[in-house]
Image 1 (cartoon, rainbow, N blue to C red):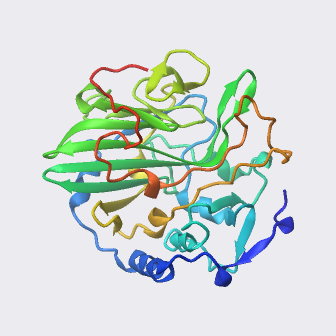
Image 2: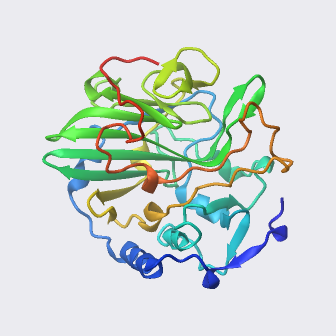
Length: 350
């Protein structure tokens, strides 16, 4: 589907501004440009306790440059391009929040047909030190909750999510992929760790999770293609939220392939849960953190030749994900507040 056939909308003629939205977006952009002072609360992200990620030995879509996702896409609403925007960067990406439903229905849509497998989708293979050289592929966000309680979010970005194969059909692919671990500290000591997986995830006591040899750094296993995070290697059925079995209908696979250290190529932020605001550390771009839209294409219609016929309601291509702004950075429990029972495990399992 070429871009030439798409209808367009004028940035200057957006008709769905909410009251005060234009001024608020301006203030957010200005804040992203000016609030750059480093502060000390991010000591929790130091390598002493930050997760290391094992990528699966069959992985084809590696950690990716966050800015490259903006460079290789254009913003759409309902398959219609927003035009006459200023050049988009990670500093001003939140100007898209002025469109549509406060930006929530904006999709960063690939400039090249993804079935042609553009190179930028495959990401960067970590080097022998675990670094994704010359790109920034993660965002580390610290929320000091007060009373000695601190949450450190380790956000991992991949340009492409390859879905699961079910009866020889690949289902659930999407452009863009944000996954995360979160470690909760009490009185400067790590107590619990969250592993994001598809629509939910798992929580473990920090004491129970695997650590890298001779260190306190916990291990997270990134599933092949889907990049869901698990506490152990192996096969994981994820059909039922918060229940991972060693076999089943929808399976993820994890193993010790390449080791990735997200802290070596990361943006750093503080987050204020009371005001829902981000503070940049060392010049990290703030606008991308406020962006409320999707980091990939909208789900292709059933008439699109790239889309597979529905399979029990599942499709090959689904919509891209939301970003850090939508990950409940001020959650009450270690688990997201999504109505699913929060189980904190004290022993490892699938």
